[in-house]
Amino acid sequence: MTQRELFEGKPCRFTVHDENPRAKLTGTELGRDLMAKAAKRRGRVLERARAIADRVASSNPEGIVTADQVLEGLAVEGVAAAELGNAAGSIFRGGSWECVGWRTSERKSNHGRALRAWRKRPE
Image (cartoon, rainbow, N blue to C red; front, side):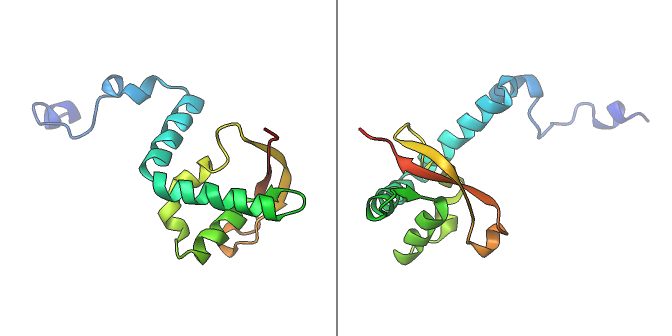
């Protein structure tokens, strides 16, 4: 018995590649699509995170903020980092922030990876 004969006529629980609308997207397009989806799903927490980013930047003489500082601010408000999830990648999206360098993450779970440092663009 061949593999085809073994499964022929049985319903397939996987989508055919051509029927998946995301299958035609480039890696960059897919990343943007999924980031927008995560931001929409976690909208309330994301808005709180963006407010914290604004607050941290305005309290810092250099106006610089990192994702670590935002997550720390959320923790102070009783919000776990997991509640923000993948929407964390959207905190500084939208054009009002500019990357001004890199910092080493202070969070133990990040194992010292590099984080972008952000500054609010002048309006």
